[in-house]
Every structure is written in structure tokens, then in C-alpha cells.
Image: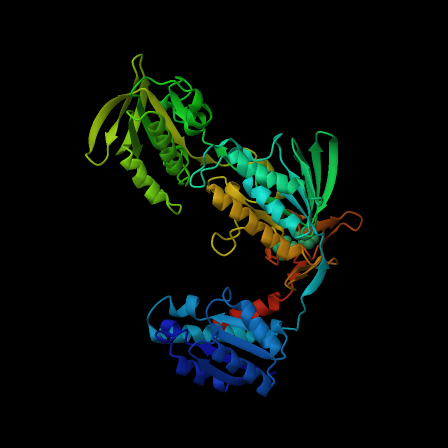
Length: 557
Ligand code: SF4
Ligand code: SF4
């Protein structure tokens, strides 16, 4: 066995708190080690060349890269050793940055720890065997759940890329909430126009089947081959899809959950959605007095809505603008925590609204009391720290976004997870914001948290691109790190089946044993640690490797 160890300085990140020279000297003559080198940035082109040349020159059959976390650059280094003629699954990454140099600045201790971590990698790598990624067939079709703007955008992209698309919408019409919005800022067009433009593009395509007034009755299968039964107006319809995009939108916050605002008890108290629908028919006195309350149902721990809904500040500005356009002499006062007019041009819009004479008071409204001559608002000015009472003719509550009503049903049907606020949880907020934990199931739009229209459309398209990337060839490669069931040891208890979030474990009723669907397995190892009979192992992470790693760290070897 010939192992190469390559130690990265990561600029000053590792070098400043780990004695690289000592590390290199320590491993230079270690068993199985053919070469030990260091480099300022092993991920740079010269750093990569140095590794590649060493693999080729020394004919290495194991490579240990001691650098940043394996979560970074893993594919880059795998490709690199592969190009140099080595099986990429014989590569071992050791994190001496996140797990070592970034933790403390004691060079002695860090260097000792780095030695142990590299040793652990070295001992484990002795057991490695060459593995191959496996090719599996997938169905080139997608199920898009939800016909709002993000679902429409996802469906349109996938169909334009030649994929069969099934779009399911529970309402009779496509378009979700956007359909009812007028004069949307900043495009200044009606939502109906946006929706109809997208829907008509979709209707012209012959690889799209749209099911409105339809719900999903059942959902089975695994990545590449999901089966859904739909309840349509014409009866049950079964479809097969390689992947799914969940785009079921949001529910408007129910303002009655804030009883102090008396919503529903007096017709002079409206939400922004009511205002949107009814403003043209609204009759107000001459020189009307309008109060606009920001953040209703958002940033409110007391009612379990701690998040910002991202669109209600702009919606509130739109209300103020509309009132001022129709009633020049109106008195419009906005009560806000802080104005988050975050989309591009939002701050300028906020300034324009102020210039039109809209007043902004940083304050908390404690209650709205409907009286015959007007609505009495009681609250506190949080800048002056003074209580106040003011009378208005109309109060508009700028309501936020709540999770979609069907969230629990869809989550349990698809076996995907909700976050603490009950929106759908992404696999990672920064690195994988479109994925769920299940391979081939993506989320799009506001069902994963508040977004504006532009973001929702882009989110839908981004999820579609990711799904297309997985399915477009009709086959995919799966990493070899998958679970294997030793059927001789399996007692048929089915504990693993319950544990597997990927639904990759199926139970063979005739043989009374579990088996793993390779395409669906994510290699998470949950089943491995759950099985009471130790019947499951994870390729590439066998217990023997892990035992030796632990032994090296404890200096028991
Ligand atoms: S948990 Fe283990 S013993 Fe039980 S069914 Fe799964 S593989 Fe078999
Ligand atoms: S490793 Fe086991 S629990 Fe994890 S996805 Fe694969 S089969 Fe499911």
C-alpha cells in the first residue's frame, strides 16, 4: 500500500495554529506512507498539480488530504485523484481546519490533535476498497404540486426542457394568491396578467397535464420512480414521476388571532388582502383618516410567528400610495416596528411614499376600539416612549404569511419535514435551499418560507433546474455509500423501515426480510445504527474502519 499525505496551510487558517513542519516530519516515515507534502492552498491549481504529480509519480493507491472539512471541495479532489489514475473512493479527507486550527490557538495542542486526526484517517484508509458509482434508471417526468407562480414557473421550465410534467392544483384556477393582486410593485401590472401569461404558455405545451380541483390521495415509491394517485374531477388518475416539486404556497395570516385588533367585528378594519379586493368599492369620508399597521402576524413571538414575512412592508406602502392617489387630503399614518423595504428599489419606494405625505410612527398598537365616530387606536410611540390615542376612519392590517394549510398533510404524504415555523424545511438553508432531505423531492416558493413574487418565480425555476439535472439523462449515478442488509441476520423486525427518511427500505413479505432500494438510499446510516440484529452495514463506512479510527484517536493502536 502506498499512501500520500498532503497537508494544506489554508493560507494562515491552518498554518498559524498548527505546526505543519512537525506534522510533515511525523508522517514522512510512517508505515505505508510513500510521500508527505504540504502546500499553501492544496485546492489551488498548483496545489492540485502537486497532488496529481505525486499520485502519478509514486503510483499512490491511497491519498490523505489534511485540510478543510470534507464538505468543501470533495468532488474537486475526487476528480483530481481519478484523473491521476486512482479510484476516488480511496481518497480520505481529514479536517484539520474546522476540527482543529479554528478551535483554539494553542499550537502544541492543535498539532497533537492534527496528528491524531490524520492517523485516524490513515488507519481507516487501510481498509478502503475501490468502489464504483452505480448507474440507475429514472423516469423522466415530474410531479409539480401547486399551481401558483412558483409551481407554474417550475412546470414551465421542465416542460420547455422536454420533460413530461403533471401539475396538480387543488383550486379550480391556477395562479394562487398572485391572481388577485393588482398593480403589483415594482412591475406595476396585475397579478392576473402574470399568471395568465405563465398559464397560457403552459397550456400550449403538449408534454404538460394540468389537473385543477385535484388533490393527491396517495404517494409511494422512491427517487426516479414515484407513484401518485390523484383525485381529479374525472375520478382517480395514477401517475409516475421521477421527481417532485412541492410548491403549495402560503396561507394569509388569520388576523382574528390578534383579537385586540377587532378584525371581523367592524367593517372599517381590513387586512391588506381585503383592501386589495375591495378598495375600488370603498367609500370613505372626505379627508379620510387611515391607519396602517405593519407586521400583523409577523415578528410576533407571542403568537408563534417570529419570522419576517418579507412582503408586508411593501404591501403596506402600496396601501398608503393607493389611498394618497385617490384622497389627496387624506391623513395616512403607518405604525411600524422598522420598515424592511428590502427588494431592489424598496427603499426609494419608501422615501417616495413619505414624500407623498404619509406619516410613519414607530409604535406598537395595543388595541383598536371601534366607536361610532371612528376607530380608536391605543398604543405606544416607541421612539418617544409615550402612550397615545388616535382616531381613524379606517385601519388596514398588513398581514404576513403563514404556512400553507395543507403543510401537515403533504409533509406526511411525501415524508418530508417541516421547520419550527411549519414551513417546509430545506436540506440546508445556504448550500441546498431547494432540496428536501429526500432525493428528487424539491420545494419551491413560499411553502418553504416567506418570499416575494420574483423570488418565488426564481425559486420555482431553480428547483426545476435541480430536478432536471437529476432526471434529464434518464439515469443517474448513485454514490456507493449505501446500506446493505445481510438477510441471514435480518430478523424481520422492520425497525429500519421506520427509521429510513428516504423510504429506501422495503420489506419483502415473502422472505420476511428487509432490502434496500439502492437508487433511493442516501447513505445516511440511520438504519445501520438502528438495526438491533446488526444486519445492516453501510458500504464505505464499515464498522471495522470506524473501530480503527477510534482506536487511532484514543492511541489504542
Ligand atoms: S432493523 Fe435489522 S433486523 Fe429489523 S428488519 Fe431491518 S434489517 Fe432486519
Ligand atoms: S442509509 Fe439506511 S436509513 Fe439512510 S437512506 Fe439508506 S436505507 Fe435509509
